[in-house]
Amino acid sequence: MPRVVHFEMVADMPERAMKFYKEVFGWEFKKWDGPQDYWFVKTGEDSQPGINGGLTPKINQQSGRVTNSIDVPSVDDFSKKVSTSGGKIVRPKMAIPGIGYLAICEDTDGNSFGIIQYDRNARIDR
Image (cartoon, rainbow, N blue to C red; front, side, top):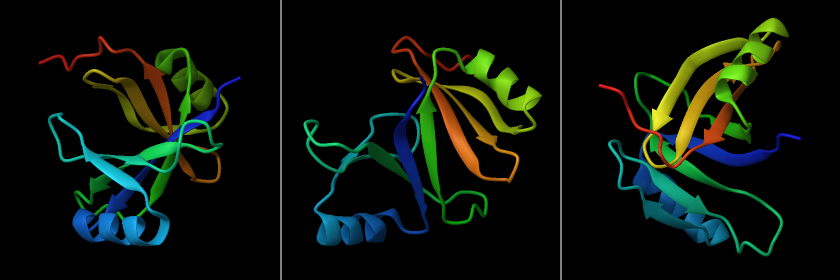
């Protein structure tokens, strides 16, 4: 059964957000070595219940938000399921190098969520 495996926060000022979450919860942040500014967020030890996430700067007037991503075996198959069940694909399947493939969707009430297919061989086609 697909489960929520990752969250992503959007921030006007990532450094300010990182400082806040470090001070309040003790979360750890590690800069991703990818093509965009992105930080992995470690919220606890792997032996504890919970999930880790990411932090990205606000781009193109995105409002501050948190998006949960759900692990699926195929982004293509689940994109079809989302569409045929009345949801929308907001951002189609994209490659995240070394991580996998991600699509951003909305449910029938306009709530956004991601579907992610892990594949370390994922590459951006140019």
